[in-house]
Image (cartoon, rainbow, N blue to C red; front, top):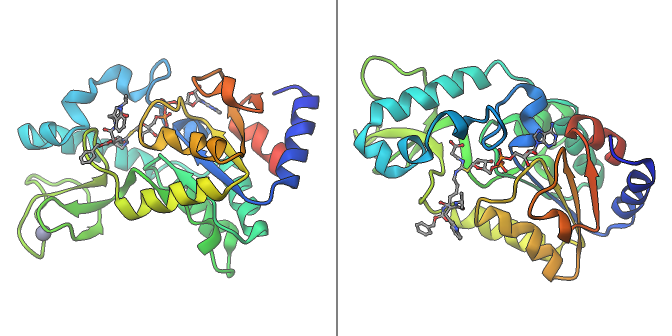
Length: 251
Ligand code: BV8
Ligand code: ZN
């Protein structure tokens, strides 16, 4: 857990902030049992990105790519939101203004938002999922989206146009959804505080989000178990697990 004075200062900064955005990465889901990408034992450590998470790989070897996503999808269905997801959902529910931006495709922020909102409208806490959602499929030809289904013997086809269905995630080398990215960038530009939680901040254009807040005169608070390329730009860097730090920071 981080030093109490740093936590005390960070709590004061959060409470004094006019508009807060949060950018999360794989680290916020680590305590839910979801493997990260670049830590020891992370997903990319076992597989080469080029073999799996690129549109070329999807066209070259759709079966292998589909099996990898299908395996992750069924594993993620067994994971639960952790105290970090819930603390963020409760924080934005109380604030009543949106601000949650995630790189994660695991859907755990959305589940925490719906569960914490109960019968209240969850709009303010539903995340902008910059890299999509692994539980959904998208047609590679017509773009129509549909809930994902377990992979069968034949590769899934689009019910509307017969095109190839693929997981609705942004692969490396694919453009992010323009509307989502523009919303996230505009939120970051109008924020006076960006919480950066559980990310190496290496994947662009998502990694530019905290810099947008900084260059608009705002501050960064980082929550991570280790230092990153962003740490030196943070006003406060809280070293610790997101599941422990966030309830203390936002509670
Ligand atoms: C694009 C979905 C262009 C798939 C993912 C400059 C500008 C634009 C693009 C680029 C650029 N430079 C390079 C690029 C290309 C590339 C890129 O950024 N490459 C990097 C690697 C250099 N970007 C792209 O390809 C993007 N597309 O720009 O297209 C374009 C434009 C127009 C038209 C056509 C094309 C697309 C990027 C999206 C890729 N898809 N995911 C899937 O999941 O299978 S990215 C993937 O990485 C995940 O989404 C993940 O979230 C994301 C970032 O990783 P992190 O979340 O940070 O995870 P990581 O493991 O790295 O770190 C975990 C952290 O948590 C660590 O710091 C650890 O210490 C910490 N931690 C661990 N446990 C805890 C913890 N912290 C707190 N508590 C804990 N318990
Ligand atoms: Zn289609």
